[in-house]
Image (cartoon, rainbow, N blue to C red; front, side, top):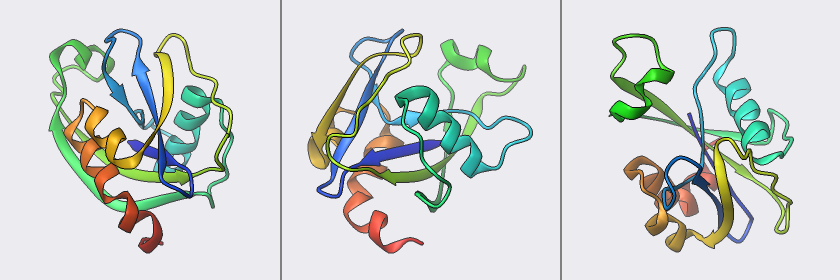
Length: 141
């Protein structure tokens, strides 16, 4: 799951991974057995940023990406799982919304204009989602 958090002016929140300094990304996470995708998105946003949002605020883009999981992160998944299906969402928040990062997952956060944010991401799927932000965040219901 990927949630691109942005302001109305398309400033995008990026988080720097604790275990990989220099790796910037949007909110990501895995669905737990009893959760819907929206519930997963809400939980991950809360855990990683301290932001509380309602289900009506999370926008599903109805886009999924499949990619190979980096070997060093496969321990987070069931044995033998090597690929992930990532569902893309966005969350629009007011400029100046406070961010409280999860120190076990991230060491820093920053807001960047959408084009700069796309360039800063280490993940191709995150980059592509941010590049689609000007159209997708407003057209998909």
